[in-house]
Length: 424
Ligand SMILES: Cc1cc2nc3c(=O)[nH]c(=O)nc-3n(C[C@H](O)[C@H](O)[C@H](O)COP(=O)(O)O)c2cc1C
Image 1 (cartoon, rainbow, N blue to C red):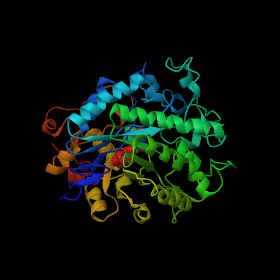
Image 2: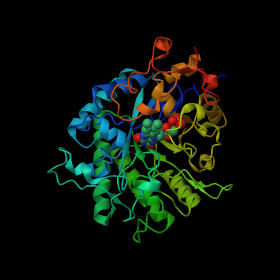
Image 3: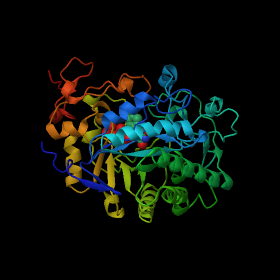
Image 4: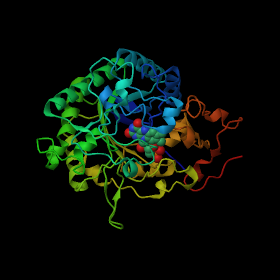
């Protein structure tokens, strides 16, 4: 299997990458409990995955207390004391700077994924010591007071709490919200991030405005397709203003209806809309008006991330975001269910410019090198995706140590997505 296209150079904003293998944003819930800032382990985690001329995207990083679904959302994380990082305090900025420095030292660039979770959040953050007494607005908020049904809509996130009815953001709140995004973007630039990425996917706040299953507003942020895209465009405009041209990326997760079954594919946290084609076409086409560094699209084929790699059917499903290639004029990153072979094909066929790998990059810190020399891959351990300290975080061996005793199985690249034939 040759991966020459995947491993060829590509420009993103002002940077020339030496390959097209991107670290997908992945929440790892290992931030420091007291400060909600990255730790020494976080620095090592990103440094391990940095390669000369590579692009990393950070885990979702919260722009404000109101944006924060941690730290009580995931049952397993709560028990382990894991946390999601923020980027609204000076301490958080300082710790992110250590991450950026370590990544730059290895010749890579890094984007900070900015998240506001909207109604996928719990007011518990108000009890956190760094929030108590600050009068910070608290979650949950959304486009409308539309409740998330935790039983049916929280997916495989172990979200075991009753959802709290969100408060609909007022027009004054939206002005302040955009300022919160600005503040976070300014902090990301201070920390040394090369890009910021607006998380506008996966059922979080921006998508809660896009989708009319949630957004029932009657003002200029609700109703028509253009109105529902307005918050997305307003926030992108603010980020570009803060960070400059070609330093902002956006992530979207277009949904749709499967003609074979009539059912939605890819909905997160109950974010459904009656007009999936119209809303995502409008969003993607409208993003051409901004000097973006990139647009990342999630392929709607990754169901339960808990599925074990040997039976994961996602990589055998077709790509569904093809129509956006002609709609979007800039650099397009694809994510979701890619294995080396299909990533190469997707770039060679012109679907995408770069491919973001999630689970395989999580488990293979030197993934680009392994793809280059054909080394077998460590198999990811689902049980340690979230909040288990060093295990499953910084203990995946690089390819020179793969054959030393390790708790991780390895698999031949050609067997990925075919079977879990473990290499002896
Ligand atoms: C542990 C884990 C955490 C994730 N957290 C985020 C996140 O913070 N932000 C985001 O946009 N996507 C997140 N994702 C989705 C990934 O970016 C990616 O789309 C997904 O893993 C599918 O790609 P893959 O098949 O290469 O793993 C996460 C995925 C995993 C496995």
